[in-house]
Amino acid sequence: MTTSATEIVTVPRRRRGRGPAGTRPRSGGLLSFGHWWWALPGIVLVFGVHYAANAVGGFFAFTDWSGIGSFNMIGFDNFVRIFRDPSKILALGNSLFLAFGSVIASNVLALALAVGLNRILKTRYVLRTLFFMPTVLSPLAVSYIWKFIYEFDGPLNGLLAMIGLDGLVRPWLADPSLAIWMILIVIVWQNIGFALVIYMAGLASVPVEVEEAAAIDGANLWQRFWNIVLPSIRPAIAIATTLGIVNGLRIFDHIMALTGGGPADATQTLATEMYKQAFSLGNFGYGAALALLLTIVILFFAVLQQRATRGPKEV
Image (cartoon, rainbow, N blue to C red; front, side, top):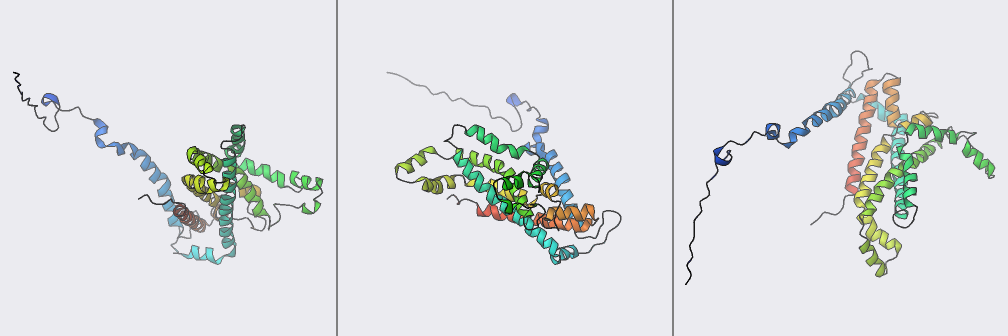
């Protein structure tokens, strides 16, 4: 016959705010303020340097300030002047053309290169580096190199003359109908590498097993790309196109180095017009209005593009 005994063990209840044996816990110092306090210096700097400066600039968009002395509040007069001036409408059109043209061309070419360099070629690592190299170069340096290429006595016209296409020889940057296209080519050439890196990262997340299963089921190359690869890299597309639109609307260095806004203001954009009005002509209030308009355009298209590339909601 066996016997069992049950012992009741009473655990002493610990008082709130006290450690073992009733001792007070060690003070946490700055940690007791919470983790978000550590981000406070960065938050203050961002709001103080970035948002506060932009808010002040936005305020001057409603004034006639010349940059020196006093100013008067003039309401929306600067914006009325912008939309009544054909040259400013042309600048807005050029900004949108360069932004969307560079986004479409650079992303299509970068995606094609990324798919080609993803798994097949043995020299893909060398080619990735070569395609990415223009991205790390200074926009001014790149623009001056292309300006030399576009010169009337430059390599481009020399090549055309050498292969017998003398009829195509022309001053590329001095032609008002071609200058904006020449700038677009330079921007696309330099931006392909950046989009390529984003798409390479997106393609690395595409499951190989799913592609192989689709190939066994009879899906051809295009069907696998359209139904498997493209939906899988939707986040990469959203990032690449959003950054491309924002950077395309802010294009400044390439235009100033290649054409300076000419010929006959044919390549002016909102960014170059803003610089010209604020710092060359002394119309700081008018330049601030152009800057505010550019900011609104960037925000509008960035939000619109994010909504367009948003994936289906998870149930």
